[in-house]
Image 1 (cartoon, rainbow, N blue to C red):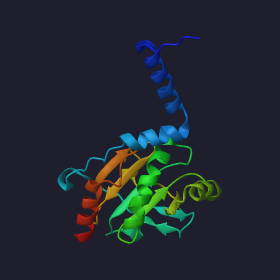
Image 2 (image 1 turned 90 degrees about the horizontal axis):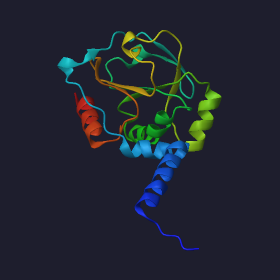
Image 3 (image 1 turned 120 degrees about the vertical axis):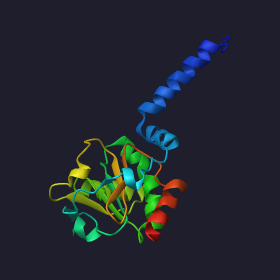
Length: 185
């Protein structure tokens, strides 16, 4: 059998491989991580102020809190789910950031899934992020989107400097420099 690869055959093979990569969840998540960019940062003057800190959170692998306890701290809030491909794609990136900043920044990972589901996902992937279920009405600042992942970076004065829907590179130098600056203020 004499088989020659011409341009059309090669492009068809590449197309089939690309489709397979995008349909297979682990490779799709890997691909999303590769194309994730650091989120854009708003100037304090242009940023929205957090509408309220009154929000009860039921700790799944950590103590339950009222969000008021985090007032005057730098806060990273992430709404996510184990079934969400963009959420799963950004989790390893966020885990690296959390490992370096967990003692300086308040991290809040909110899901509507139960602990059993989250625990299996965390154990499988080696995550130790503090996970919560919302136990009361969310502050209005967090209800502007129903999409996940949705992430917010809030400074000590309650300014929402980043409001990002979709996966992002949260472990970038740009974000680390911003966190260092916010922590020092």
